[in-house]
Image (cartoon, rainbow, N blue to C red; front, side, top):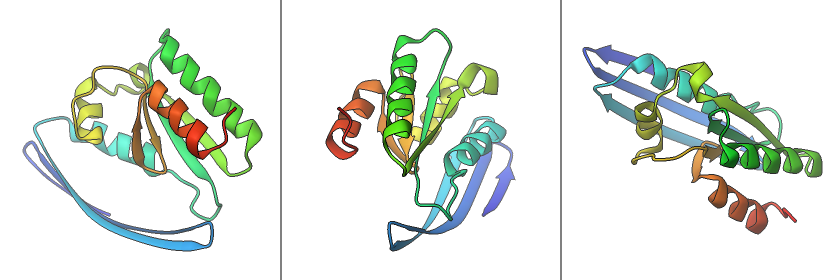
Length: 143
């Protein structure tokens, strides 16, 4: 991964190669961000990409805040999936404790973010709690 910063512009280029369920994947991407704190983007990217690539895990990241009922629900669903499946793991990130702003999440998601939680599965943005629950029901045998 290369990260280039000048003034308020951040350019990140990286290639990610990994094996999952006997398939091999390789993705190269460039992200260009203008006009916000680059250190928060790097923190978000690090959290999302902190996957154990040697293990066949479906890794979920839930960005939430304290006292949010939808964040609590998303975390409960993730805990159920962790107990039920050998290939599922998750990390809950308190955006207040980590200093991650709404603008930082919007830059990562690529569109306006009005609510939390914001949930990623294997680095793919799923959406909020309702979308996560629907995805889990349809793809992960939840319930």
